[in-house]
Image 1 (tube, rainbow, N blue to C red):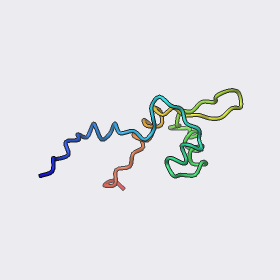
Image 2 (image 1 turned 90 degrees about the vertical axis):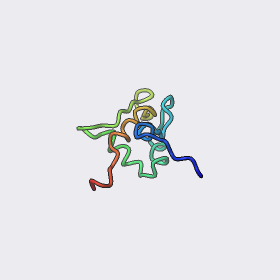
Image 3 (image 1 turned 30 degrees about the horizontal axis):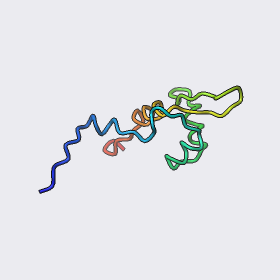
Length: 83
């Protein structure tokens, strides 16, 4: 008999797509999430609930921390039963 899956809801919620200690460029985020890069920029520019981002230097690349990305995705997770 196969062992039962003992994952709790908390363990499932803490699963991460991005490594917390890393920063990601917008093109990397788009590739990983399989979305257009313009979507990532839209999330960053969202006035009410922006994806936290920073520039590496003046007029440099935009970057997002893996920890912020994981939190943002968890916060915006869709529950199919409510769709």
